[in-house]
Amino acid sequence: MFLDVKDLAVRKVHIRKSYAPGSIDYGLSEVKQSEPLEVDATAELLEGHIRVTGELRTRIEMVCARCLEPVIEEVHRDFDLFYQPLFKGTPNDVERLKDDDTEIGFFEGEGLFLADVLKEQVLLSLPMKVICQSDCRGLCPHCGANLNQEQCRCERHTSDPRLAPLARLKQDWLKKQ
Ligand SMILES: [Zn+2]
Ligand SMILES: [Zn+2]
Image 1: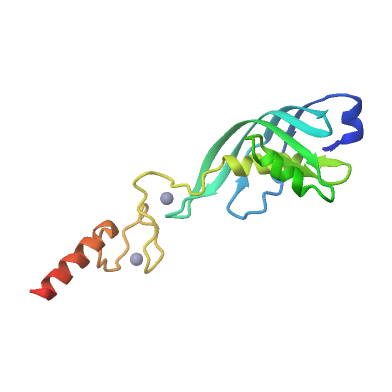
Image 2: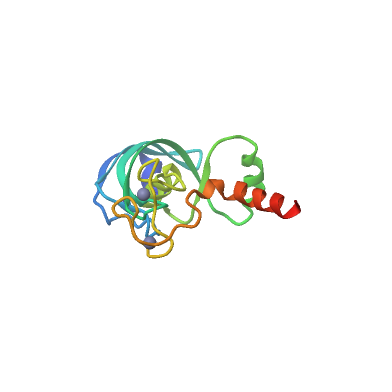
């Protein structure tokens, strides 16, 4: 769906739309939409800016940072966004607008695609890293076995990586004796 400034100049647009998985390209292989994205929003033209307000809901499949198994993240985000036309000479305005806290984006030409707005909002609401469970044991660094599911036969030299700095300190101390 394209939000055209010419249409918005005539009237406000109410949007209620569902985007099936795969219809929005998030540009990241580790971010997959697993259910339809539901959006309920309003778009209008306000002093030459496109304002988009509303909310979105979906579920995103990410990958556990330790064991690489899929993890589902619930996404529910409210947004109130302003987009200003990108003209030559805009930089001065950008400086001015940076002073207040309003979130300002830009649009080029006739308007912007709602899918691009939604994609950005979804990406902003996702955590940088997800873990499938707080005690996920991850993959064996030697054979790649998922240690949540199986016990591999590789030797484990340092059982707890959090204790490694302590072990090193102890070694240094012993050397000095
Ligand atoms: Zn995991
Ligand atoms: Zn192993």
